[in-house]
Length: 175
Image (cartoon, rainbow, N blue to C red; front, top):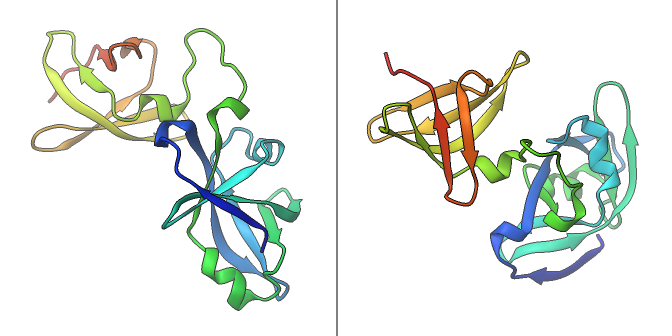
């Protein structure tokens, strides 16, 4: 397995772009669950970093395969399912600088996680803990003092994203 030295850089320097899944076949291949859109874009972002106990470690795929169903990846030195299985569930990230610049008003999900959500009355609803892709629209999952709420990421609901002040303003009423 080709691994670089562990890197202890600030968490914000890395953006998780996917995770390694179950083994595939008998030669040490792993399924790869991409968080990019479209999924195959993840193959263009190199190098990759593997999350481990030491932080993020450089890892280089020996080979990749994409099909209509999924993406598979093979790392040098992982030549059977038993060896490859050790990486199942591990996150893969790239450096933020590797990602393309977004158009004005567009955001990477990672940029929205942790932001405080404030409604139209000025009430703090909580912080974004993660986002979901539902097919029709993305959803912010916000953890408040007592519960989690799901807020659709729609232009009529999200009135402003202020990254500088770490706030998302929404037109949303709790029922």
